[in-house]
Image (cartoon, rainbow, N blue to C red; front, side):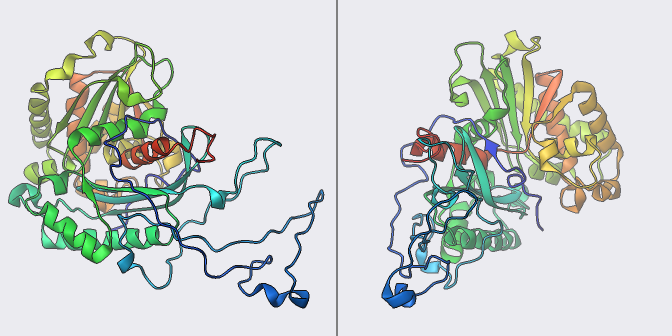
Length: 448
């Protein structure tokens, strides 16, 4: 089941850096190997003696209106220890998205390297419902350009609520998706990568055992992150959607097996790292997959929907830090910021899209009445109607109402006139932290 990707739709992604994790967490040094086959100036592989009388071909002088040809070099081997080289395919896998084209020539004195020289970073997120990968290069300060992406619904957490273990079919689906991710990573020169697993692997009895299988079969070493790290990465990934005049934000990420909520107070002096302003956070052990499995996802009556809302509301009632933004609730500069398939689906239905379009959804503002109407509309649809909507589809039709129930419980605790939709999240947060920690933006994207 292919998932719509939530990262590759835009040419550039803004990302606000968050507090860094433990030193070296998820990243490590890279080994390099000299290229074994130089390339001639015309781009053809071969010996330099191919040119006249054994002399190398001279560079053509730059003249106005003429192209300049320079010798290319085979890329150096530069892989993460998290990507096992022993499982590398004999032939590199062709990337799904071509590398970014070089930028126009800057003014003299501010020369940037060609795009193929920019450092490449990667982020992989294996969640309860999805397996997602982003590969990107840094651009302007705090931003990056996605050059490759992958997303697939694997439902790793299917049956986890009832059994406490990851099921064999679910693990098989996830491994097959991770093999594709591994091929993509091994086909590129990656400066740094971080590969994470969240709630399904965190709570399953056999979660660690499953990741050992992933390392053997897909050649990828994933780390299980804790809930606080997950909340911080969500903030980091969505930071660029928090505007300068904002005073308070409740950022929430409705996942498959858990839902992270961060309260952000921006009334003081603002730090470049948005996560420095988190005054309270929680992670609810409930997501769209676990909630739908307990209450049912195909046939959802009004009573069943209300019961799901009440279940989540009861969990939020025990959140001690829920009132840390009470002084800002009435401010016009306070709003909700949601990142998940639930809010992006609502936005797509709201826009009446014939096909999901990330460029129109990411950053969209919805007022309270619009959200109310969309939730009521979805609750009134039967399973087949939900399947037929192009922004929901068969893969999400049994999960979307569980997501709406979590959203309604959140809105009841933190009522706001505005909700901003973010089609970004953990992967973008990982990339922004990797790039910030590596210092690539200190020299305006040129790297160290």
